[in-house]
Image (cartoon, rainbow, N blue to C red):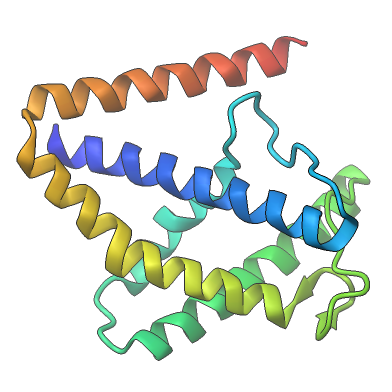
Length: 164
């Protein structure tokens, strides 16, 4: 139960920090906030999924600069391929890096890759160990129940968005 709780809370934390990153970028680049999430909640689930896709590959790397570089490279490749698939298969262009320094075909930017790498390193080396320590300080049942509750709220939000 504790591991499931850590997975859920890690997902939520990464999704929330990702949402903050997206909102901050919009404000810096365009001078206004824009709801960058697909849900009503202030989260971008792709960051939560991204964290848990990167974690098994990178969690044993001790060298933080190497971790940042690898996480950034993997994130950039994933983002570039995702952009291609969305555009070619679904005629969707959900993001662009037009005007960003070191942009590659407006699909990815080396700057965003570096930011994603730093975020992944912080999640793997700081945030997830913190969540693990918190899970040891409170009742396993409460920790697990709170994780299931937040997951249920996210699923309900997702269902509401899909119904509309």
